Length: 120
Image 1 (cartoon, rainbow, N blue to C red):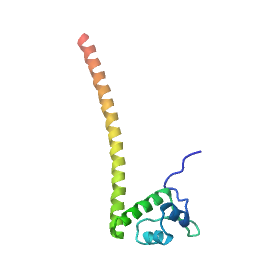
Image 2 (cartoon, one colour; image 1 turned 180 degrees about the horizontal axis):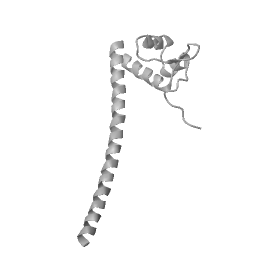
Image 3 (cartoon, rainbow, N blue to C red; image 1 turned 30 degrees about the vertical axis):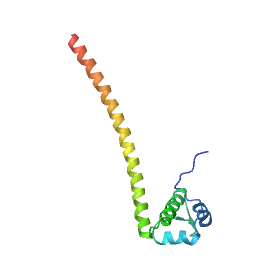
Image 4 (cartoon, one colour; image 1 turned 90 degrees about the vertical axis):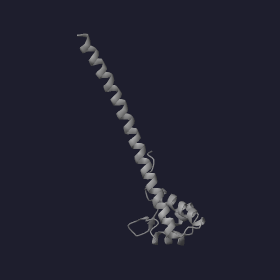
């Protein structure tokens, strides 16, 4: 059975509130202030993903640290941007390692060709 994507909206507001240990009214407030945008079912019911629940938990932690809504929004956006940059950086490191390996192979091949030419 394939793993579910963490972005898949599966939870209603009651379950998301329970998972994030927040009142439903706080979820509605966070949505109204732009801290998250849950998906909507065809009937208009909010549907939260695992990523949404994680964002709610992070928002709640920041709120308990004394940040206001604007501060929470800024920190969450910066955290998300940082995570994206870290992912991009990991991809670039991997690509760089592949290019280094390819370069090493080409150097070895070049050295072999030079030896063959020098032997002639």
